[in-house]
Image (cartoon, helix red, strand yellow):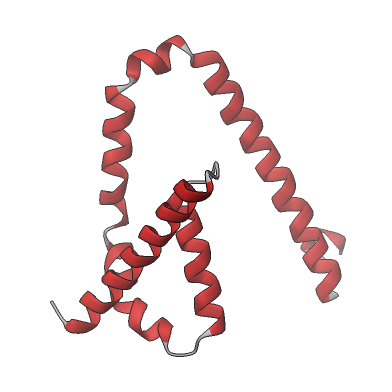
Length: 124
């Protein structure tokens, strides 16, 4: 392992830890890694050289992204009884969440096209 990879993975884990500690101390209903990712994003926007430190580790993690879904799949199998007893609320949340996400995405896309002065391909 190269020192660049170790520096990058250490930095990613530090941001995750900062996010986790912050959400627990402030009692926020946000997952710690999400807050850590937001803080890392803001830091990357504000600093010039940090992206080159994080890039080797993030590229390595992204190349093995499919493996990161294994714990989630195991968690689903462990709690299959709970999921089975609450299938209707879970299904409704998934369906409505997907529909809301699609609508918001379309709304943002139309807004960005107007902002950038571009027409959609369907306006011909």
